[in-house]
Length: 276
Image (tube, rainbow, N blue to C red; front, side):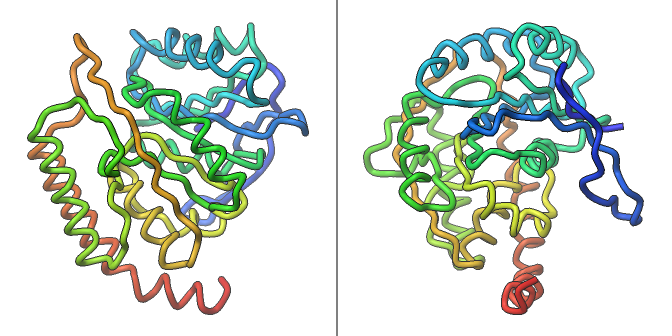
């Protein structure tokens, strides 16, 4: 069974499965004063997850009131075990686990559905985006935007990664703009912030479970009239770490995802117009 766990958690029913059965999900009681849930999606990150959590806590410990949720996508290594151990020492750390690997998007959806803070901000476990972006993301949300996006394609962005990936990323954004009629310049940057209340209004309609999850949630937010701001991101290269992005395979999957999102447009807009 999928779970959300730390030492101060309890079971509640929150949603139904596709066949209509209730899914029992474990959810942590967070202090009412906690403003932000930081979400870190993870799949087989046993070699970096402890260091990532420690760096994040050190960076934000005295600056924000937050909980830190590791959205474990059914890892088969010791990722979950490491996070559970850390959560025993720090009640702000939460483990949200899918029983089986379903995709990064599925892990993020589960974590967001269980978020009970005002804002939720996620970034990837490798910390390739400088954490200085966090303050700009939260400022944007506090200023009334529903979604704040770190953008590698912003004119002020500073990026250090292969030219082939930059070209593919811009090409993907161009196709999304043409077919999905969304002006966003960067869908795939792994650093985004959400007004939790706003995003929960559309997240139930998000069907993508993999890398196209970001695209679908942004595009549907745009179709629903939510306020979106792009903020320049500083991207660094993490040397000695094997990338989990496989360019040609993922381009094929993303093209398929774009088509699926496009096919869902009319039905989604009808539901929005009906207030569903």
